[in-house]
Length: 197
Image (tube, rainbow, N blue to C red; front, side):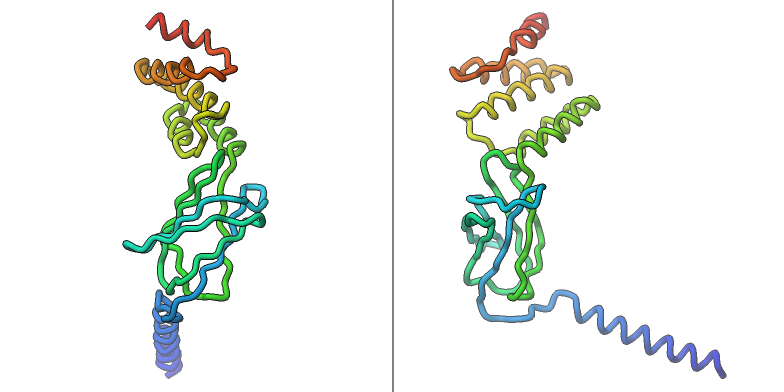
């Protein structure tokens, strides 16, 4: 008798939980257009000013920039799933997929990594002889081609390709450095190593 009652209660609870959690799935909570509000911070939780924000859903593209407090607002948005791309010079290009927008009162917080954080990761990869991972990470860094940071990236890539045995790509990166008039890095030892190959 008791077993039947417990079994019945268990089944009712199970059905209740299934109904509750399945109804929470991805049902839009509003149908009219509204504003999407977000905050963009760096790895130290500081606001990122002037970052480009791209919001995508299917063929719909909306974009804006963050203000001096890292806040951005995109208007005329319906509930649903959206993909985001965040870009700013000397920061990692960050892509975030499938962000559910179903609460218009919520401010969404996103994080983007600065060049300092990226170069710390790259140094770690290079020290562990994981040159391919380090070079891949350099490709995610948005940089002005006229900056010293661009020169540093070319030097890192050249060294990484050299260590991976891809001499052709290593030379291409060094040639990019050689064409720069404002390059202050001494890359002569790497250049000598490549000449011998």
